[in-house]
Length: 424
Image 1 (tube, rainbow, N blue to C red):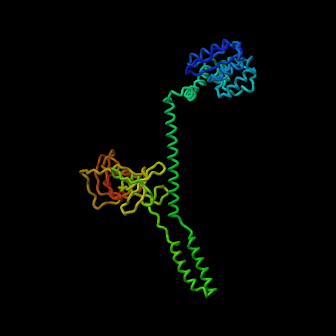
Image 2 (cartoon, one colour; image 1 turned 180 degrees about the vertical axis):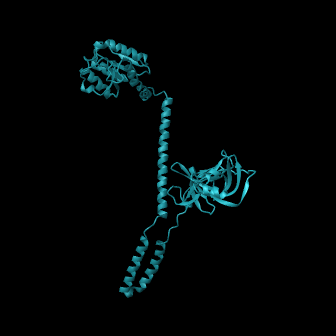
Image 3 (cartoon, helix red, strand yellow; image 1 turned 30 degrees about the vertical axis):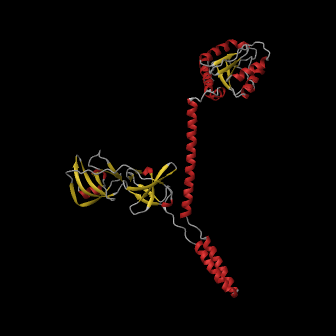
């Protein structure tokens, strides 16, 4: 494997350097392989033996060290040669890519060469991607990956040149990923601390201090009974113990949503509950106590906000003065749609109680199917019909919802008994 012509080594350019090693009998195939690699944009070296002072092992070792990859042409005559095994082991010690090229089938292969990247340049139906054309494509693919891995080495050889745009983009992505992981870790720590404080403020506590105090009192009483001469001292001790007990048994202040630290925030536009309503809780977690199930489009007065696990929670003040938190994905800054004034509506006096059908009902701002939906009420939701108007084949009813909002629903989305009550 070593008796091939030694060349001048590799030229000083940026192409991937490929050392093609072969036995003398396979020189013709090696030359074709070298021509293909050259045309594919690599820098091949097909070594031809020349007698030199350094000997074959020193020369071959130097060429492997200078190359980025070792391509080993294996045939029956070289598959078990000691030099082949040495070249592969030397390349692996230097972390070089090793590719075995088989121009023809081989019976038996050295144990040290089994399992390496192998390209079959002969056709075998039992081997996928075998054959001269597919072999060229596979070899080029294996060597092309080295172009990405050579960038750090080239940068070390040319310290004066700056990083490539690809390196800068990769470093920027790594820094962004690191920042995201750190932010996520910080948010988790904040959430755990918030949950711990809330459990401490709201969870049940065993009255350890009270039990201890009563035990001390009982011991003092027993001592006074057994030794009447200690009465004076007992009175003094009792006064001191009473003062201490008042401090020990004083109740902690109850938890308040105002205890949660938030960023002061006043939105430029009014905030409303979303189209499906919004749950207002006593602290910014879904496990918080539910203060109010606000109906859709309920106005919210925002006084601050806090980011928990990547989502904003707004601190809001309810109409009754209570303070709570509502999550950003259940609220909207869009003002509720306004019901249109429609001429020709016949008043229903007195109003008739009706309910939505089995599929619920869409309440719209006008008696048209393409009118904006105010809210979709659930099945059997109660409504008050206060007017009606005929549009095409259907009656449209002007209704008032339980939360006071008004709109229009079509007669085919209300319950059958409601249509009977209205004589539609």
